[in-house]
Image (cartoon, rainbow, N blue to C red):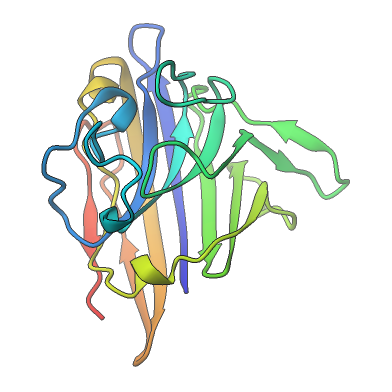
Length: 206
């Protein structure tokens, strides 16, 4: 099983956002032939949707894609497995303890916290800081991540040239835990604070 928690903020530079920010789990740090734009520097028109990609991503999307992908809107969270066509997507929001659904503006330049976890059922939760972690997740989706987690070696936020031109992204910090046959592996990455055009990664070794 994989669980992760991190904080991020997205701030526009020229009034428009890039295609997406994504939390990515992949079997390699190198993704040959990956295209930018709607493909987020992860996949391409040639391999999008291939089972052999062994790639999983949670996307925080600030643009409604046109063309091959049917995005629900320009402010959503999506679960992607081997394809940039999301398996499930929801408008960015969190559930207050009262049960009320409260919208989250991803391009607000305010820090947002994200929690992802699960193997057979994936739970995705977001909320602005400094709110406590909501008890009810934004999404719970039945999914088998074992083919990807079995061969995992890299936990990453990929380079995205178009985002760096239009958007500042600030990672405040991140941690992840992956359960393996030999126990659990815990990662903690205190990413440099401040605006950065560079991505950070941590390697997982099973």
